[in-house]
Length: 412
Image (cartoon, rainbow, N blue to C red; front, top):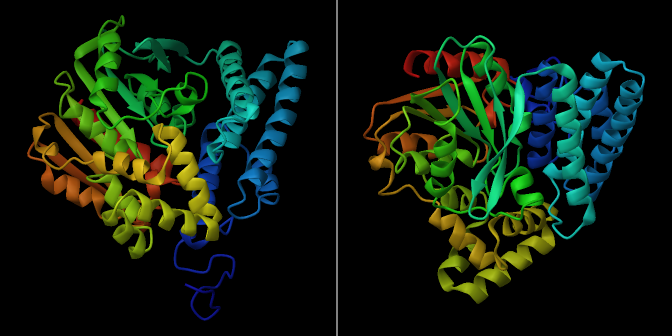
């Protein structure tokens, strides 16, 4: 909706809700930028620092995104190291925390697996975050979860207020964000007496960038090794294990829950029934038609579309890397395999399906998943009144935590 002084008094917010304002005139980049802003609530980013970066980003220009965030991360990192060298540990810890956020942000829109900056920035983010944990005393510890000859880099956050054997919430993100950045989950968990295990699965975080692990549709083969380790942790009640997935994780978590029987609850935020369908819905109909014609017509159709759109070009390259495929046709076969048809009804644990009135990446998918479930289930819908109506409640994580953990307190 265009700005109109007759309808909306503030021309910088050209609609009835805050979500109509874009900091970057690109739907995906703006969503990713709002994700960084959301972390201010926990001291993981700061407004002026983020807006300074936004001023340097050209819409859908991947390189400008990488350089702007990395330059900020480097400045903050150097400041943290200076405080650290002086023994100013309070200042150093908070500064390391923001540096780690910005190193991860630089890779959020980076689809260049062969670029040496990927490993450099990923390692820098890891080192800064671990130093933050050391200096701050925040109750998080790095753990390696064995996985098919490698490991899943993860963080276990132990609740300082847990009484006896306590519930454990396992969670992971989707195709873009990092679990460390999703502090609204692990911080709220430990304050409520849950332990929390934040997992970087194949295709995510440093499991992808440092360990070379790529996505798979049969996510139960990821979650089962995680649960194997989780139930062995001191202070964890093995009968009170919860699983949560965000974004693409809204498919991954219910897929795992259909086969992993040790889960008491599952949260899909937002729920996704068919990942491939949700992707195709955002592309021209001609692309879907070409997919039905076979590999060569489809690869040509996607190449033509990518030549016209920086966003599509980035998405195809980024997704191909994360799924470990070489061609667009192979990629969309992987997307199509991420389908809960005939699987969702196998879930037996109580499941919460989350949706938002302005869900822009998988519209309608949450309701499809909810309708397919035969287990005890609940539907949580964030509307404009909550101000948490965007994808994964970007910009509204306080409300997201309050409503989500109210449900978890009742059922986990």
